Length: 285
Image (cartoon, rainbow, N blue to C red; front, side):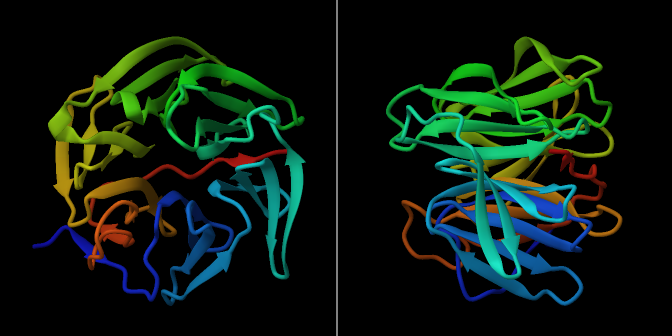
C-alpha cells in the first residue's frame, strides 16, 4: 500500500515551504517562496486558493486577532485575506537587503522563531530570531547559510533548528520561559541523505525531517536514532505539518526549482504517518 498520495491541483510550487495547520480556519496553509504566493487548502472539501504576493514569503503563523503573521523578505508583516492586505510589523535586518526569511513557527509561549538567509546562498549571514509577544526581536543564534525549522518538542524542553547547507540539525535546551541554551549537534546528514529541510515534532516527541535532494521524510527518536523513512516521488522535499481536527493527517511540501518539469516536483502530498502531531503555536503579539 502506498504511504502517500499527491494532492491534485492546477499549480505546482516553485519552492513550497512553511506548512501550517490552522484549527481556526480548518485549513492547511503553505507558501511558495519564489512565486511568490500563499496557498490555502480547506480540508473539508479540498478547495485550494492561492494569493499572489509582491515579495518572497518564507512562512506564516496565526495570531490572536484572527489574522496571519508572515515572514517576508522585508520583515514581519500581518496578512488579512478577506479582503487581502499586508501591514508591516518590523524588519530585523534593514541593513541586509539581500537577505530573506526562510522558515519559522510560533511556540507555546506565543513567540515566533524564524531564520534569515542570504538569498544568493553565498554568505553565512543568516540568523535565528525570536519575536516576542511585546514586539521585541532578538538574535538567538547566527552564522547560518540556509536556516530551516524550527521544531519544538511537545514536552517544551527542546528546540530543533537546521543549517541545511551544512547538513546539520542542532538542538537547543529551552528553559521555563522558552529561552534557549546549550546548542548541540543533533543530526548530521551524509551526502546520500540530501539536506535537512523543514521539520516538525509528533505527539510522541519524535522529530520528522524533510530531505531536500533526498526524496523522502524521516522520523528520528529523541536520542537521534533513525526510526523510519518514507520515500516520496519528489526530489526536493521541503516541509511537514500535521493537520486535521485530530492532527492525524500529515501533509508534505516540495520544490520544483532547479529541476525539469515533472508530475511530482513542486507537488503537495498527504502521507500516512500513523501518528498524531502537536498543535501549532499562536503568536500572542
